[in-house]
Length: 185
Length: 293
Image (cartoon, rainbow over all chains, first blue to last red; front, side, top):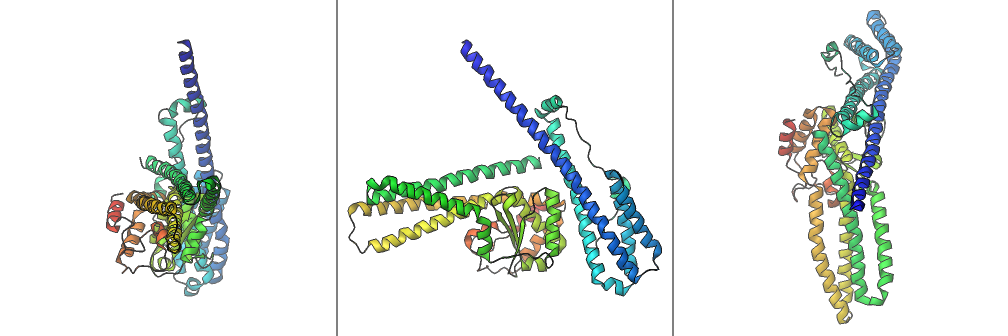
């Protein structure tokens, strides 16, 4: 009788230990995924910022009188590059987005600029990076969702408490940014 | 809920893939046994060893080169980074949205709108689209189609379908050999034993054929397509793109594509052999499901 009891206890303990390990690893994987997707947002924002100087040069070549619009873009880029945290970067990015919209609207009035292949290429590239910024943000939030589900659901919540894992906040876009219409070039 | 759903789909696909692989190996071993009966039971162990080596090699080569074979069988070419810039950039965006590694991209010659994904796992995946798809679909529609293909990759449908293709290829090779040996065997008088074995082989193939058909049907189950559509929406958050693409595909006056081997048909987003039999759920049903999302 004692033998059977002992075996049951050993089996139960073994199951618990295996679960503890596997939950620990799941948390590691999910946390890494969040970190990774966060850096992906930064990569895309940086790529976007890198495209701007080229665009400014091209625009200047055809429409150098549009100083105000050009300045708005350079300022927004500066803000994007110098922003420390993600919130600041994303805010600067939406500022950049609206400044670019003005530039592209102005370009309509310059047939030579509008037809310039370099300009068209940059326009397309900027639109593509904007999509990627949106996707990286989406994946970041998806990763947080998986993590939070893990932290809150049973039995994950028990292990989460054991390892001191807490719910993470979603990446929210400011109300003003949400209203920003999607620009299609 | 959706997240749970695709996890289930993935583990189901992985499980079925393993079963399939084991059954491929088993079929070859059984065949080896039957053949050894035909000649001389004394050679049993030798034939078994040869059969096992052949089967392992076949599965190994088929499994590890599946994406190359699929690409070669439709005569697709590697997509050009500058010429197919939009194709690249859309897939890059979708890999960010899905967290998948970047697949290899190919373009195949065809005026039809179509696309497929293949490979043994997400790290060794390919996505191939037709020139027609690149030409006729706008950016959102193309993105929807590509997201559907990435859905197949993420859900491990590509692994399962790859193995089905390997199995179908094997069965056709075996039946070829069987038919030929019957042909040559008819010249000799042949002893009773080998005749009996050939009858047995015939019965075995008769049993195998429906099993193969079953696996093929399972591989193209509606669930798989609906799940890939759902994954596409999960990645793009924009069902309209895929809906419009499906509508365009439906409108197209579809002529069966001759160049595509039937074995790879289940890979495509829309069945290239509409007249020969459906391997996909009707497009209307898929559009309906997408519109509810």
